Image 1: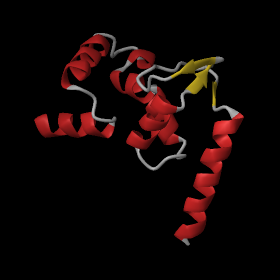
Image 2: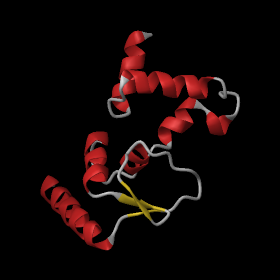
Image 3: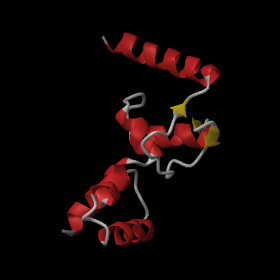
Image 4: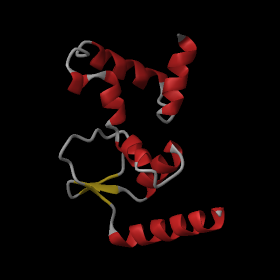
Length: 113
């Protein structure tokens, strides 16, 4: 049980122990409602959503990008990877930053062959 919890913590970007416990307690009571379940809340974090898009290879790279560059969520710059995103929120990257990300991604894919 302990090992599985640690794996889960590290998979979602080395969440601190106390933060993980608070998060779990908050969503444990509302587990009957699917939209408020624990795993749904973990998957709706900004860094995890950005990781699932597969722009960067790891959760840590996504977190670093969000900390340094920031993403726009509903028109406001969000620099916290822990932010929860809801259905209907609009996530965007500024065009200047996107050009550098796209160029880096192209080089990585081109030289992988």
